[in-house]
Length: 268
Image 1: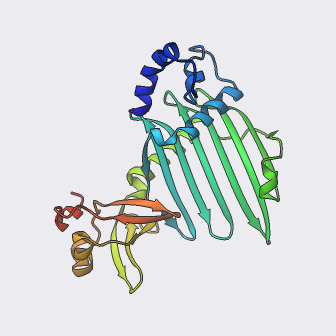
Image 2: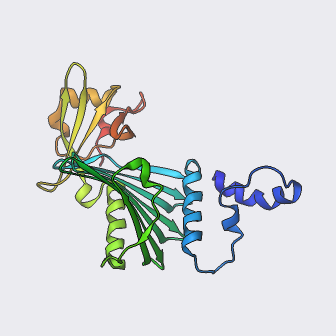
Image 3: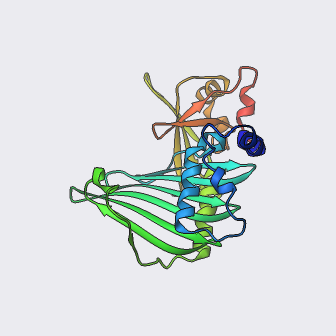
């Protein structure tokens, strides 16, 4: 709501005082309504979102694993509407990728992707940008370098538009949402809990054979963790009602309040 209050106060602030920095989205608010966005205005809009991420509601998925590959999603929303999805993917020793989907008025306007590929001991870095109107891509560009420190100095070059259609991007967004809420192929249930002298992990598995799995590092215990350790069979194959946070690309367990009993750990 901070951002919303800022929008309402902006006209008063402009009349009362012309000094001080403007909100990063101020110029965009004053843009002509209905004018089609250009590549430059799309990038400006995306930069304004990046600069004000702390004003949005944030949701984070688990760190999902499939084989050697891991993935997690961050979703930023304003008034219940998404403004940005960030997807982090890592295939150990092969590739790292970050994809960012920017939205305006429920429409996808920009996809930015950064990729590191390792092949035969040689690294290749690539930045890509795809611009959208009415959720349909109209321009794609990229740049590459073998040196990450030099990548940002390389100019973007037009690249041939991919064969992806509007439906494929819609499926991408659906997958991101499913990952956030733990639905469909990301619907995980309790499998086991590993307890060692130095580390404890909650292990989750997919309801689908061969599907995604996830682990959650336990740093602080609570009633639910005590119950998982004592009677794991009671919780096995059940969906747990738990919270986590992502630190250093790892899910960390957030203990429940003291007055919440272990029975509430089951999502019914």
